[in-house]
Amino acid sequence: MREIQFREALREAMNEEMRRDERVFLLGEEVAEYNGAYKVSQGMLAEFGPRRVIDTPIAELGFAGIAVGAAMNGLRPICEFMTFNFSLVAIDQVINSAAKMNSMSAGQFTCPMVFRGPTGSAGQLGAQHSQNFENWYANTPGLKVVVPSNPHDAKGLLKSAIRDENPVIFMESEQMYGLKGEVPEEEYLLPIGKAHIAKAGSDVTLVSFGKMMLRAYDALAELEKDGISVELIDLRSVRPIDYDTVINSVKKTNRLVILEEAWPLASISSELGYMVQRRAFDYLDAPVQRVTSQDVPLPYAATLVEAYLPSVASTVQAVKSVCYRL
Image 1 (tube, rainbow, N blue to C red):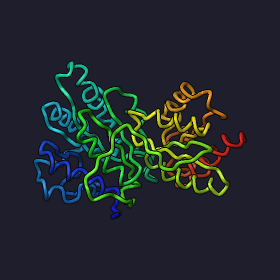
Image 2: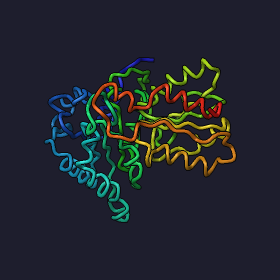
Image 3: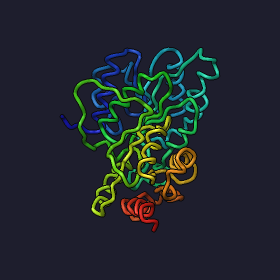
Image 4: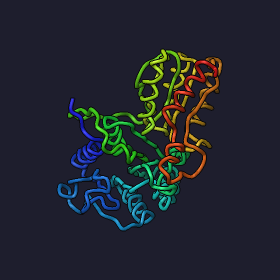
C-alpha cells in the first residue's frame, strides 16, 4: 500500500469530498493563496477557485460565524483554525451557535460543518500556542470531537466528518503533518465514535489518542522487553467516546492506564477513569492510572517542554505500577 503524509491524507479527504459535493467549501487564514499555513490545502485554490477555497482576515470570530451561517443555509463548510488556540476567539460561535442550533431550533436548522486545525504542543511555541482543548469541546453536547493519530485515520475520519449532519471538531497535531503512513487509494470512511484496538494484549489496557499514540507505541516497545503484554486502544474520537471497547478490554486485562496530552483536571482520562470504575470496578486488579501533561502553563525552554509533556518513561512507569503495584 502507498505511504503518504498526514497533510496529504487530509488534503485528499477534502479534495474528494469537494469533488463529490459542491456544497463543501474551505475557509480560513492563508488556506488559498499561501496553500495553507501547513500546506494542507496546497493546490486546492487552483482546482476549486476562490469561491470554494476562501482566504479570510485574521478574525476567527467573524469567519467562524460566516461558516455557521453558511451551514444553517444548506452548505457544508470546512472552517480551518491556524491553531485551536485561536479558536478561543471564536468559541462563542462554536459553542453557542453551531453546537446548539439544532436543539434550539427544534430541528429546523442543522450545522453540518467541520472546524479543523492543529492542537497541542508543537515545540517551543510558548504557553498561548500549545494548549489542548479536546476535553473542552468534548464537554459540549451537540458537537463531535475527532483526534486522529495517523494518516489512514485522518483521511477516513475527515471524510466522515464532512458528511456528518452535526458540527465536528477535527483536531490534528502540527508535529504530525509530515508523518507518513499507509493510506488506501480507493475510497473509504471510518465511523466517528468507534475506537481502534491498535494492538491486542493480555496484561494491561493502555488507552490514548492523537499525537500521544506515538509515545504509546514507544512505551509499548519498552514494556514488551520486560514481558508485559499491552492492549493498546486508539480512541480516535473523544466525543462520542467508545466506552464499550475500553471496558471490554479492561474486563480482559484487569488494568487500565490512560495517556493524553491535556492537563489533568477534567480531562478525557478523568472521564474514562470514572466510567471504567462505574461499569467494570469488580474487574480491576489495580487502581486506574493516567499520564497527562503537567498542571502548569507550558514553559518556553526546550528542557521544560519535555518535562511538561507526558513521556515514554512516565508511561512505562504508570503501566508497571498497575502490573506490579509499585
